Image (cartoon, rainbow, N blue to C red):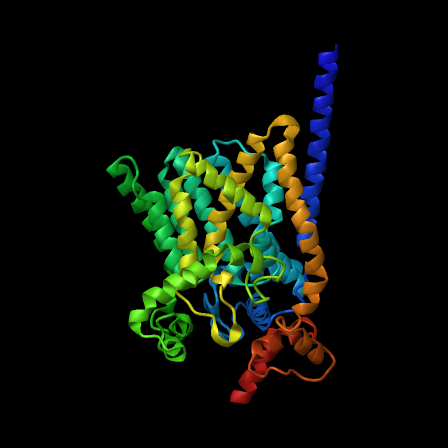
Length: 465
């Protein structure tokens, strides 16, 4: 009887723990959608411009310029087909407020985190504590923040997560359509966010090359290339359009503007790239300082939390023991994911180095490794679930002050970065203080002023006449 009572007590404790864990997960999901219009403060001009194009496509089937196209021009660059199409559909379903647009980013971020968890689940042999994994993923500061900013990168994050999840599934069953799906997601990620032009092809090569049999390698790569070509097909319409290359030339470390401003020569580029890569891999930057650009980071700690550092340390110990539970291919994807940031320059007056936004391709393999490390800690300390409790407890110990800072101090500090002042001036009838952002102005006139996109098009036609 004492043994039965002990077993019942343990079962009761487990059930209570499961209920508490699920409640925490639901609460963390709700927090991701809390105060979307106020933290970050207001809409960034680029966010408003993308929203304007999406609203026009939803209303007229055409861009704000009255054209039919897969890509819609912004004040600097283009918004891409997936973001544009999904956003236009979202507008028709949910509306056009700042919170609604950012809620779409939040939902896409959750889909990406789900794909990360699925990849980890398969890599661990279909053994994963889903509650612990969910808490780890929902408290990571990098994706928490980018899930609250509306534009292309969060879509690209979800696509790369889908690519790695498809690879992890292919790794088990080796079905060609999964290799095609991985390539398709990779191609769409490249189409959605230009920095992935570098990291995605290299990542796919690392993931699918070198199978045990040469025939298997050739077959899988053939399907991957087919999927990649399908995902990249929207870019065909950009061939010959010089404006697509202008932004790249402006940011590339080898661009003449950067070389002239920084006093570099072509022979300096290898050392510049290595130095830039080390800036992004520096533990102080990753876990303490983060990104100086408050559009990409809240300023509270780094882009990864201390708990993620602990989990990555656990992964390192597993690797040192030569365990096969951590695929070496996955480890190689981390520096590959940081490579686009190393090849671009966002320094000088902006002071935004390291620039972790362009390293978003590294976030997926890093988060998969974090889940593998979290599971390793949980298994190492099995007694009464002490390992799981420790991982969840430490995650929340970080996240509570992070969230408090995010919705208070960061909400105030981000006003200058997210153009809250100019938005307030426009709302108060003081005019728009950024004449170089007509699309952003157009968003507020449509969302809050009640104008239609068609009225803008008609007025342009009248002016032309």
